[in-house]
Length: 172
Length: 418
Image (cartoon, rainbow over all chains, first blue to last red; front, side):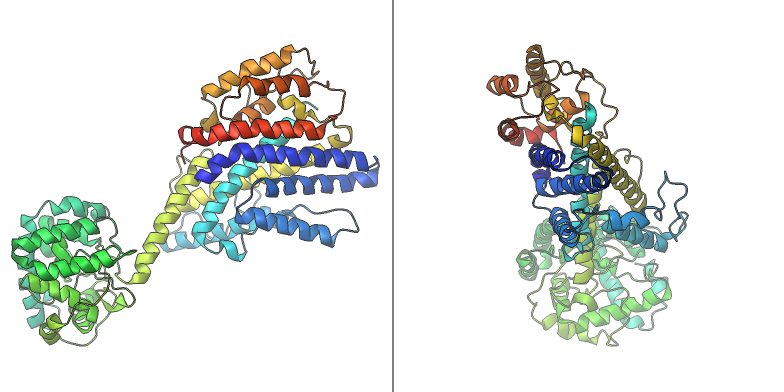
């Protein structure tokens, strides 16, 4: 907890300091064209994610994210694009019984569940959370307790990231 | 305990039961005299449910049980008593002086003190012994319990771990008080596990058990209704840590205050994470479309014309509470205004809000005036210009943040409670 508190200002600083030049470089390199636009999106996404990973060092999820990003880049290097680290999770997004997603398929377990099923539901949710957080399925976060800690830092970093991105876009 | 008697009656070995019952009675009496234990044990009696339903709780619960209900309830030896154990240990010493014989009790305390992770079983007064009153097998799921009571004793006798307990009992002039939930380092499982069925031995072992040397184990009194083995103890620790994390997450995720269930909380967390990720994705796409023509308005972060208070477009709920009420922010404003007074026309006059807020959120410490000077000088290339010295302002940005950062470290305690 404490490291996270201390981290927030530095996170934003690092994030901005990484992302802005990166985006500026993209703008310089790419010539506006339809094809490039698509790539630009992915590149921008990559830089955004990488900025997140690099700004929040010391967490299992940030290491996993960085690793995944670099792997993606290597895989798609020739194409010059990279995927969002969440890309593989898109299919999961709609299967989670989220309150604000009425179309989402409900979890197998009914909400009105009895005691023994509650643990099972929790397990399902934890499993789902593992898919959401980078590195959630890795060996670093096998422990539920670690998973929840990582979730805490991940959530707060995501918030910071969103704030920075919004502010960057605010005046454009 | 007469109340226990009917239940005990179902046990096959009446002799043993009777004997133990007698002991229990005696111990109960002793415990009753030590009612203050209840407070200590209150630590782990929190979950105690002394209903017929028989919630078993920590040994501490046993105490309360004893004092309140007599031995009608069965206390499951629980290895998990962590917190009050040491205190109970001390009380045990007090008990020892009551005539229990301090030697063995001290031994037990020593065993306790040796313990690092497992709270020592304050065999003492916890009087968990009464736990024995297994008659109440609710916990066990009825009939089994009764038998297991007796069997447990038997098992305990078998177990070397039991020795410590026996020793304790001996102190009290009672023998085989196995119920005590002793959590002995490695293999406590056999002991006092309500679920345990029977070792098949009889109470005859009691006498010789009492002679056994107390092993070098950590003896922890089990909570009422909980298992005493080291696995369940570790499990309980783990569960507590998890609930601690969950509480932290609850503070982090907006709107979770009313949700009580773990599953519900996890649901909310999932929703929130997904929502944040979607926002990032959306903003990323937006940024990509804007990017080619992006005059990086990072400088806008520094140049504010005004500070409108609207922050609604930000998912800052999680952060706002931490940051909004700090006077440093107020101090920051004048700097901003000074900066904006420099005549930079940012074209976007919409009040930095978000960017400002973002900045403010991240810098919780007051920014000294010297830093403001660089704000004056660097950022104002005007909206139409690219950020020329991305490096310089970047560096200064870092400086700014570093300054704030160091201050923040000290201030962090004040700001955020986590």
